[in-house]
Length: 432
Image 1 (cartoon, rainbow, N blue to C red):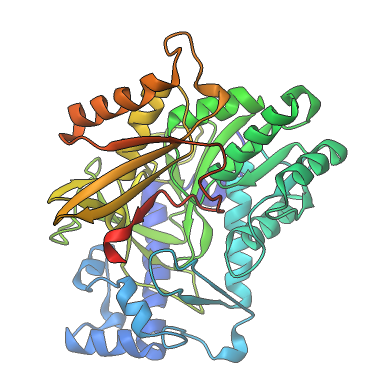
Image 2 (spheres, helix red, strand yellow):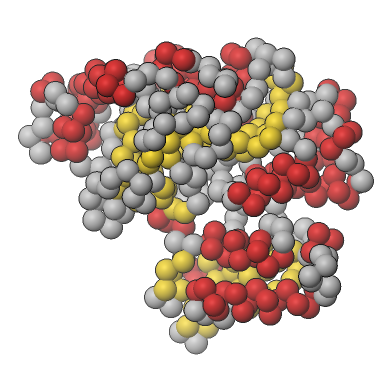
């Protein structure tokens, strides 16, 4: 079983918690002295960071939210002088104002270690040639994985979001064996290969590491079949560090959180109540090694569960379930709550493959209306579905059955839905 850092990835729970406590004590002391928000907060609740004696003391501190970070824009959450910040990056801004984060030299070293864990757990070794197909820029994906792959010793191709056809040429000519990208990009890769008549046998790919947006087990199976590769998931967010927070091992049944760097909690997103193992709620993370941009009890907005059972890979790190839903991704339609993944699951089951789709929401005559646009492709023709005309009523019927409303379902031409690094699944025109 490939384990990059056996010391920390297989550390027993009692030893790990002692390590966490020591690092948490240092972090709380640092933010109190250097970040005005935490200094004011700790004074307000009469919390002495130097008196913390157990991990359970962490729950005395109120949560940090994205609004906190927005109010501190651009540098007020930094815990080191700008002269000690060796890199700045930012969030994509898909859920609001972009947030600037900073990294010290030690932060970059830690980040490199964490992405090396992700890649190594996904099967990447010094013998691999890997295409990094995330953008190189303010988004953290490209550079994050680049440094981790180099640390492992793999041959790195910083191809970024190259034109798909050019990407395929590079992969063929350079004999690429691994790829890391967003699942949307992988799906586009399959589309172009199909259009050009290129088979997986013409490539040297054997593994794919997908992240940056949710994807299902059905999608994993589809990509593994169509590209003849092994696919693993990973999770991260710019505010915390970028990619490297958690990762799948070869068991593919949950994502190990690097607890020597992050303390995870699960809370009820409505009440803030702390939930137990196996209970689904909002993921809260505390960084315990970050120097430039440490965050205490940060509400990620991502919904998941934590599981502490033993893993066949030998790691002792807690696992989180794949993230399919976000608190701020929730669609409220005429008072009813739902998530984009529910529509994706229905489309996949009805059609037999995960299509390109987009949900359009508008308000007409004071009522919310929802349209599902689905791109047509040759993959829709299966034995049980001979006619495209059957798709629209079948999807509408299943949505009615599960979500108790009837959507408008529209089939659109291939490539009608605009491609992005992260697929924009919901367009809410009620805000226009």
